[in-house]
Length: 134
Image (cartoon, rainbow, N blue to C red; front, side, top):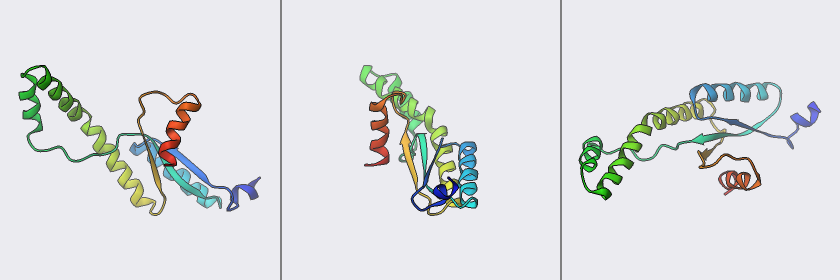
């Protein structure tokens, strides 16, 4: 069995969350695989909230102004407030992913964004597969 696990025909995908602690554990596992003569082919970061463009200056004031407008303006303001609320998590994930990538140069990281539904059936696996194998 160990011969098969160490052969070039066998590779591992390490699945993790995009948090510092989870990525540290994934890094430990990748290193242990290597020490054991096995090969991690890639890391899958599950439920990642990819970092998008930086938020523009004045977004807080804009969200406040929109919050006192008509229904359409309030809806837009609510979207901005939600984006602001999620920004610390996005930044934290992006930093953890950058740090992991710097420590494991050449190891691909495949990102699966947080999906609307849990993956519990074949259809859900197909949705995940679309991110892994575009």
